[in-house]
Length: 210
Image 1 (cartoon, rainbow, N blue to C red):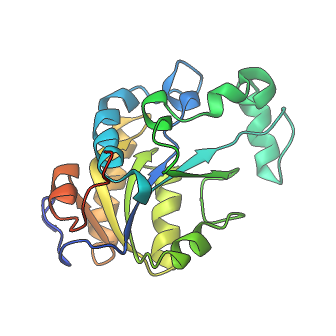
Image 2 (image 1 turned 135 degrees about the vertical axis):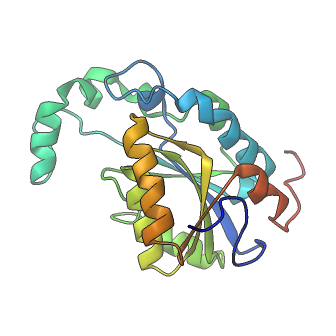
């Protein structure tokens, strides 16, 4: 298994961006979708964003407005999770966690209605315009939206650096299993490291106001 504490393909440069997945109030503040240990990883996410807010893009998962909406099986999904529709939780719960929202702008936000941020958005086009070929990925959940984000990035040829201590999930079991898969099945295309290793090897100046 690859080491967890090194960037196997060398340091990061100005072609790297930080993609932070779904660190939102609806996952962090006592809802039916609460990720219990989001608070544990939030300081690590903040550390990366604070160093490079202008290089950060946040994704936000937008639930259906009301039960029964959505295409195909998403309709059934929101019948099961009626308590998490917008009419029940309100738009305020879609917002980023407050300690992260303060970085927007210069950080950017992309909204999505499915697990992957690559569908129905201009994420790839935004990154290409900025000359980005590498993504440092944080957020939640490790085994759901982060998984969709990672696989989409791999399919599009991005170098993926996965921040192990800045990821969270609803269950330890599937979080650990997902990290094992990232190591063993995507070892050439995914580099799991800690945030400290990322920041020490990201060879661009921190943002002036960070």
